[in-house]
Image (cartoon, rainbow, N blue to C red):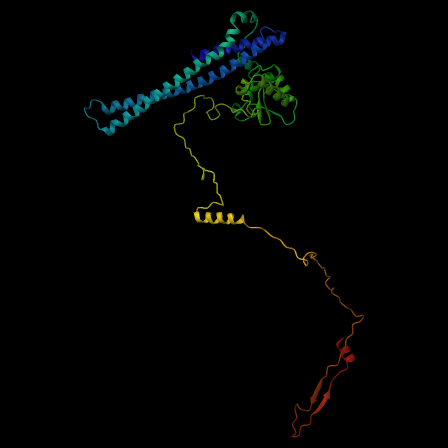
Length: 405
């Protein structure tokens, strides 16, 4: 079956089951089983996600085939111009053309293998969607669908894309903000939570997967981005985001397939997201033909057992044996004399002498006069007889102290 036709058929099932769930919620009906309908919607959403990935791979393969066809025509024209009607052509001119032709042909074969793999994957997905088709047959659903309007995801988004549906005039919430296309760069590339499904519908309507409309306003909360199906849903979710996020986690515990479908790996840290290393939007990963690997061995793989008493010398062992044999004939004796009977250890402690100093009551000193004598009559004497006499200039202590003061 064509992938696009199967994708349209899956979307038709989704619109049917979603309309029945909305009718049951409004009219409080319990036929068919509401839980079965929700499981069917989740199954169809999974099938839709896989078919989108396969369709994306087919589109990429188609572009690659078109490129190979253009290259093939170009190489054939060059080859025809090179050979023409010549009987002999130099190898350095014609061989590169044939090598390029071989590479193009190998590319065609690779694309054929890829398309075969995609076809096998599509065929293997069909048994997983058979259960809800057998339980919810057209004969059961047709009477229930009478009078209901079936809306696709695109129609639901178009209904809420008007200006009136925006949350620009919603009440202000602390630490929260709504993003819009005209105020946010790269708005279309925002990583939306829950793969773009409305978190409010999942929490309130028990795992009902409805696509959100980013034009209503994308809620930014803790660096995560949430979109909703209506303005009312956005306002109610923004009033208490943690409560709704916890409800979604509990819903994923009841339906574990939602963990991979909605990418709830941050709330379930033990689960690794599939295809984390693959390119976004692609399921087929390139096989690794070469890989660097290394191995490390232990230095001593055998546990060491060193015996310190080991002897390799036979004569040393004999000497120890004779020594042990002689010990059998030996005896230990002890004698205590009268002098050592009452002897004991004594200890004596002495006190070191103290350092002592003595201070007198008064401090006295003695000062003596400094003698000063001048001999006069020697300078300028012109007579034959020198008359010198001594002049005593010594002052007493009190006079000297008065002059100095």
